[in-house]
Every structure is written in structure tokens, then in C-alpha cells.
Length: 275
Image 1 (cartoon, rainbow, N blue to C red):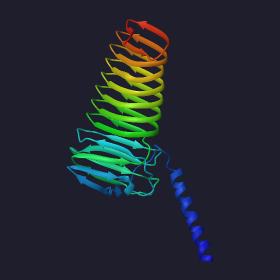
Image 2: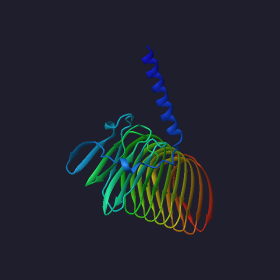
Image 3: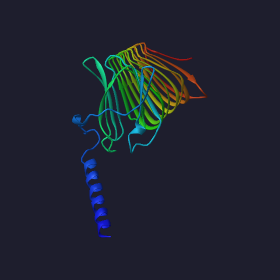
Image 4: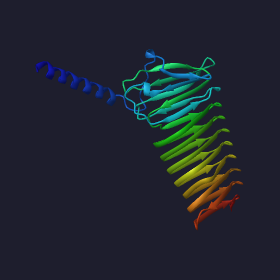
């Protein structure tokens, strides 16, 4: 019996120690230990494609998220969930590598060289995606993620289907985003000839397009829309209830009313019309 209580005491102290480590390591301040790189377990390989499945890593619940990263020039992907997981694909000496770390799960960290096409299954909600320098990222079946922030620039390209409470997209420098998005709140900021093709549903959408950017949302049904198009940009959107439209410097807003809507308009040298 004495050994039993000693064992419980030791286990309690160990749990407290681990909790202190987590508390002293808040999200955004985590520095991965690059001395402990080990390869991620390979699930299978077929037709030049390497498949990984994080169900091989313990203490991570299955969410069924599918990330597909095409090998390309300087593609980069960052994934984080309250500092519970960390994933980055980066280019080093003309080769692509994937670094991953799960500091709060007890799973191993690792660095894996990427070859050919790379497919990874992640089991945690994803909070952020970023692609630049012609990087290409495709995400499939990203469902019930609490919040997703997407940044794409410098001819980067992202394809993403997501169901989330809040969706944010920032696109610039001839970048591209394509996806089906279902979100309570959507914020889109485009400039520098960036293009976004979005379908889906949103209760509240704020769309800003500048510098010849294009927002193609004819298949997006948004109830309350705030749209601002300037400097030869174009916004296309389907509106359910209200539209607050602002255009300037040859900017264009084309809207399709799904029912009788309330519309306010500020026009300084642009176009607001039905489609």
C-alpha cells in the first residue's frame, strides 16, 4: 500500500511538472528543439507519393484533415493549434523539407526531406495557412475548424474547403485562392492583382479589393456584405439581406440579390451594378 501511495505521489508531481512546462511555454513563443529531429513514421508509399498519418503519433485525436503539398519553388506551410502542433514545409539548399513538432502531446519532433508529391494527414484543427514565392498548397475536407487565417502572396496558390466560425484571407502580389468556405464571419483583403474564387455561405462578409485585385464570389451566398473596390479592382458577390458598397478609381462591384435587399452605395468614379 505504501508503494501504491508513493507511486501516486510521483505521478502527481510529474503531471504538475509537465503542466508548468506548458504554462511557461505560451503559444507563439515556442522554440522547437532542432537537436531532436527524427523522421515521421511512413504510412505507405505509392506512385511516387509518400503518405504519412499522424495517427501513428500518440495522443492526437483524429480530425480527418487532408493536406496536400506539391513540390515547388519555396513552398511553405505553417500549422498551429494553441501551440499543440507545429508544422512547416520549407526550402533549404534547393530541397524541400518538412519540420514538425508537437510539444504538448509528448510526440517526437522531426525533420523529413520531401520528395515528389507529399500528402500528410493532420488530426488537429488548423488555424493558419501561408503560401508565397510560387508555393502551392491544397487542403481538402477542412471541416469545423474554429478559425482559419490564410495568407498568400508572391504568386502563391492555395485551394481550401473549410467550415469555420471565422475565416480571414489576405492575398497580394498576383497570388490566388480557390475554395468553398462556410463561415459565420468572413474577411477578405486583396491587392496587387490577387485573385480569390470563393463559393459557399457566410452570414457576414467584409471584402476589400485594391490594385487590380479580383474577388469572384458569384457562388458565395452572403447575407450581410460590406464591399470596397478601388483602383481597377472587381468584386462579384451574391447578397442575401444587406449590401454596403464603396467604389472608387474605376473599381467595380457586381452583386446578385438573392431576395429583396437593403443597399447603401458610395461611388467615387466606380461602378456598382447587378449581374
